[in-house]
Image 1: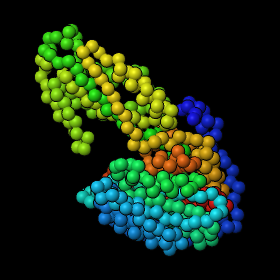
Image 2: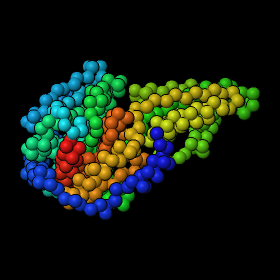
Image 3: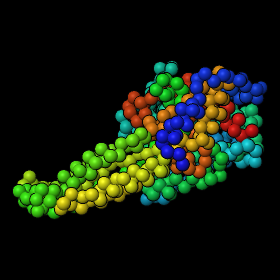
Image 4: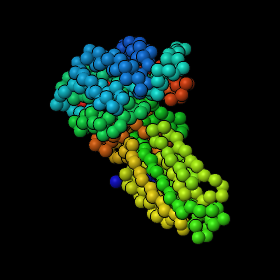
Length: 433
């Protein structure tokens, strides 16, 4: 695997610029584009219908209702659908899987999610439209992307372009709060990837720092770390002496050493919470802790929790090794240990991902739309595509244009539904020839 520096160099060399010349569309591709435009009004009605259903991750009934709406749309264009239930103790709705089988061209996996961050008691209005923009619960993250998938597939189906092709879609029901254990929650998605050649994910479209349309060829891993410090306690008058430095000074030493020694591009290790004192405890389920102590007592316990994000598995392994080495250098009278967990694996910017981007960009340019450039991998958060990226070439950010995700001001550009579906339909058509 390339190092982050080598990856950045490759990106600089392989950057798809907006000066790409359009080669035009053949007759069948023109028909597909016409089909997208013809069906866009119905797609916008579907978007409104699905957004009006609250489907917060912890509202399983709402997620299932959205899944039933989308399942009918898939079945109407020749897909077989099934619902993947999660164990009851996971408190998650499950996932929708839709499939068409064939033996021609690349096998394409399309990824969406039905849940949103807005739960049943959310005060955010579900739908507000001014004719050019829509505001509401999950409009861009990511029911807009789900609708783009369905619109693109409908256009391809009408043109007979899906005949003999293998296309799968997995719409997860818990992307915003992945159920635990993750290996159960993402088993269906990973199984679909193992039967596919490429994965296309439809989280919201982005623009790079220069305002150019961009897609995602890499996402950083999302995980965390837990630092535990135990120290010799005693009267504060003995601190720095026979009783050592105490838990708080040791925790501070570790955190400052992280800051001084580990900072590099695409790597972050945020220290989020610290609880310390004569006694300290932390409840992960409630994300809160308690501590007891007095100013004249050397603190015995400290617990620090943070997250860890990296672009490649190698970068993550190196960071963990260096963090562990720092922890081992404990101050007198203290003992530290650190543990790690990974929630989302990294989606590294591979040559295969770059090739997918080139194909996507060319399709966009040929349709008279803008060329697409790579979005800086270190700037995008975690997503479902990361579970499959180690298995197949992957591309994300093919969804709707908008902003304000996860806030009361979440919005979607209405015109981006048609634009995104044209690009996606042409990409799928070219991949599956």
